[in-house]
Image (cartoon, rainbow, N blue to C red; front, side, top):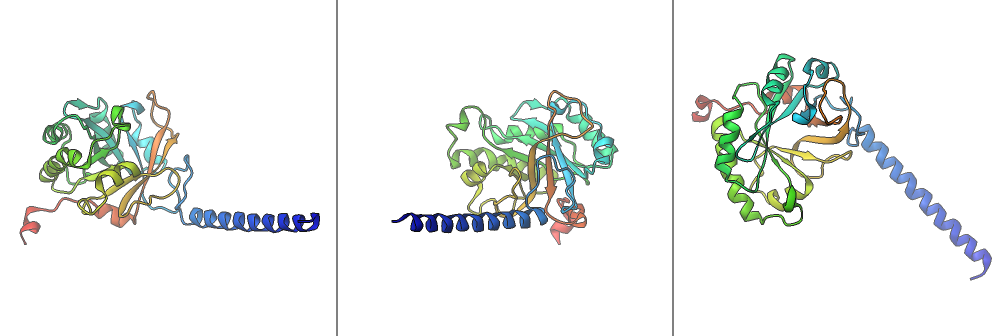
Amino acid sequence: MDLKGLLNGVKRLLLVLLAADALLLAALGALRWQGLLLLPDEAAPEQWEVFGVDVSAYQGEVDWVRLAEQGVDFTFIKATEGSGLQDRWFAANWAGAASAGIRAGAYHFFSYDSPGLTQAENFIRTVPAHPDMLPPVVDLEFYGSYLKQPLERGQVRAILDPLLTALEGHYGVKPILYVTYRSYYRYLAGGEYGAYPIWCSSPIIFPLTPGWQFWQYSHSARLEGYSGSEERIDLNVFQGSKAEFDAFGRPVSHEKAEQ
């Protein structure tokens, strides 16, 4: 190939790359405009009506009124882990969120190391039921040795199913399943858990898991109003309107269930 031909080939390649970059920027711009791409520190994004945070003892003492002033509509609060652990700040956070007018739900960190029924008992002892609460959450992710050596699907179902059944029986509503992509596709995909609401962790880009209701889009935000060892806080949105959120997860009364 002569020099002129080589230069023409390079020019064509550059034009193709420029066109690809332009398409990529246009696609990212469209996602950004629709609120399907959110920045890690973007609190109360304008494209979403309902915004929330999730907290645990790592955030320490929380000023829930201050969080409400920053647009927080809901929160998920860590309550329990496994069959014996209770978050030491749960009771204060539960009461504080209610006083500030923030709708709260409690979450349980799922353990692969103890029976589902005893995990449910731990949660039920810790979290009082009331009609305005969000459904209980089971946080299904990997930890410790299970990061490299996860249990098989059947082993997890033997723990998870009794836990979900017990929580639904006590609170009158199907629990929410908090997932990562890895935990969802390893343990939940396939239809058996299709009736359960999904809260998906997917930093920045909207979740690609089907049927999600809550999107945890940031693990690294900083808001005002808490003083724990962890300076960061997780940010979330609800997929739906404020009216849909207000109706979401309300327990079905026995009278309605019998009709």
